[in-house]
Length: 229
Image (spheres, rainbow, N blue to C red):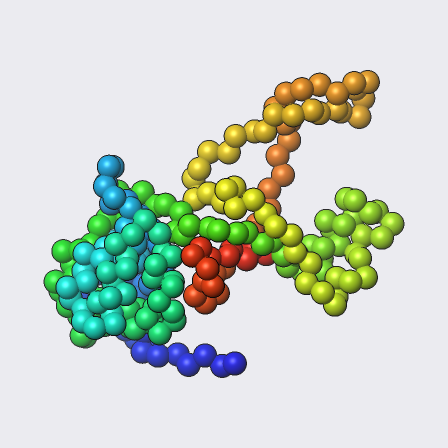
């Protein structure tokens, strides 16, 4: 399936948000990621879109849109993206196109400027309410390395290349970046110790995980697909 790129990806497009036009900007007008943020301490969580060093409060800007786009924007007055995701890709795409046009220099709506919040002052939150968490082995190398810890003589099981290998993760463990990590308590025994002792873990292992949401959720809450490496 080949995706058709629309005008939102035009490399020549520029924004009236000056910081979005910097060559090293992570959030130029061609990249308008949705997320959830709190603009100030005590404020209600909202769905926003990053642009330059600012965040657009999408729901508060809903009056700038009409029809399907306005409905999608109003769905962003929520503490997560679930409601917007449930509307489906046509609504997401229409909202993204309207935001791209509204934030552009060429066709921009400067009234959107009043709905911008400085990213540096915002608190970023978990973007969705996660109902399930399925973790996949992303590559044969990852599956082999993980298997070697349990089966040194036969690290890669025969079915790996024929059936996707996945397992349920703990959805409650998904946290936003910057959340402190607390060392777990449990039994531990070093190679030179005669008996185990109870206490905090002495070492910490970490992985790079790529998580994604594909399409509208089939249930009230979406499933997170995670690919470990």
